[in-house]
Image (cartoon, rainbow, N blue to C red; front, side):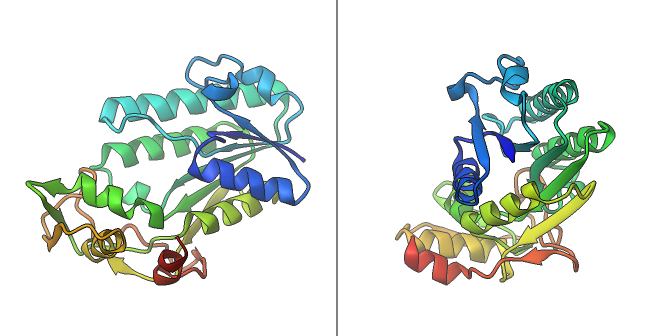
Length: 246
């Protein structure tokens, strides 16, 4: 099976390609580095010729509301058009658990818009919604730091290792299109502030983390929106086990 991975040079993309290749598939990275620009369409149609599946794990370089909306809608529209022209039979996209439940976040609104374009395109699809990655714990703390203090709510998260994300995304990619949503997450639930404390302690970062119910997460207040639903598929890797190996 030939699979074109949009964003194939990133954290998840490189891991997914390694997983797919180890199972005998032809997985090709498509990114600006390889001459494929999904925003302008440059090189996109040519890259999809002969592809069975397109997997989109790309991300916006800017998280500003207008920028991220433009990135996900423009990139996705261009991909879907090229897929229809080249006969791609399955579009897979990586999205975020809870995106549709947190409309105050510009980033998550953009992911919802991306999902709608995919659903309405007529191209068979699978949307994999993942929780936050273990690797992003420090970045979350950085984004919530003011005057050297991290302020985050105790709203629940259920983070997951990127290796598990890649494995589960690869499985969805080679499977039949669900024409629906597949949720994945880690095995443990933390408060967001607790997750940040663990991430900072892991790298000996002395910043204080304060639990603040009014602290926003990328522009929105969170409670239980960022955890998988009852039908979610949970990975086995626990945070402490991952931390000990990385």
